[in-house]
Amino acid sequence: MRVLLVEDDTGVARALAETLDARGHSVTAVGRGADALTRHRDADLLLLDLGLPDLDGLDVLRKIRQVSGVPLIVLTARDDERSVVRALRLGADDYLAKPVRLAELLARMDAVARRAGSPATTPEVVHVEDVEIDLGARRVLVGGRDAGLTTKEFAVLAVLAARPGTAVSRQQLMDEVWGDAYLAVSRSLDVHMTQLRAKLDRPGLLTTIRGFGYRLGRG
Image (cartoon, rainbow, N blue to C red; front, side, top):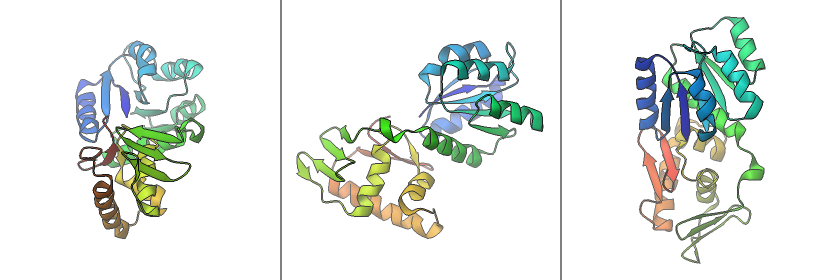
């Protein structure tokens, strides 16, 4: 997904941006609140530091929420209860105190993005190259022919098709398809992805994001 990182500490911003880029996200890093106010419309998710040099982060959050419902996670050294409550009441979707643990940040980004997704805005039929994925009829056509997917194979593909071009984590796939991402299921996901690739027979259609998950189509 497209992430706008608003962080004035260049070292922290660089490390976070490189890590998120490696997980399949497209990250734009800015260091001022004014930049966040002008560039948030181009992002799928915001990571907002509160200690900015030009504006208070809470004011930035308030102004963004007046015009946009973009998913937003506050990242800050302010971990006192008052700041947490204010941020959440002003419309932050989540709140993480620094230093941020990467695995937790990725999981919270997934959760916030998933909650923000509206089923009503997801198209019933998704087209990627010559592959047609009918989410309503639960049918997949490749070059006009039925791919013959099993129920689980379709379920895995449907999670990716609901977010074409966006990296989806293994954790999220397992949560949505199997209900609980137990370790025993991890191998099952690998097997189903292998079978999906074979049946779709379209190299490059399903991309593995090393150490993170998968993406349908180009990001």
